[in-house]
Length: 109
Image 1 (tube, rainbow, N blue to C red):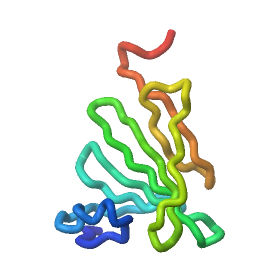
Image 2 (cartoon, one colour):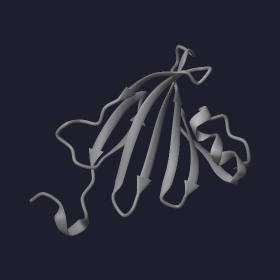
Image 3 (cartoon, helix red, strand yellow):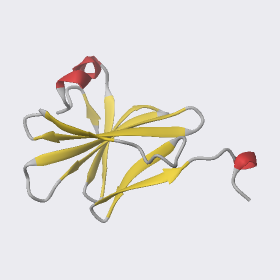
Image 4 (cartoon, rainbow, N blue to C red):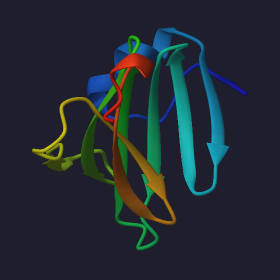
């Protein structure tokens, strides 16, 4: 589905002039900004807040995470894990998880 005016926080309204690809997986809605950039939204089951994950890949992926209330007021930034250099965030089974990124020739032995 192509979305012209996604329901995103005000700081992302600059995207409203662009066609964004919207898809869903599980309880997450994904807005693809470009081939290497996307925003995932996870609406908490309580219905009072939204987890936003913004990920940029070039070629390694790195994410930042914020929690908003349903009127897009920032509740808090979630810091990346201190032991990771370029972590990528994702939601699985309702939990925020992080994974480290490595180029194929740089993975830990």
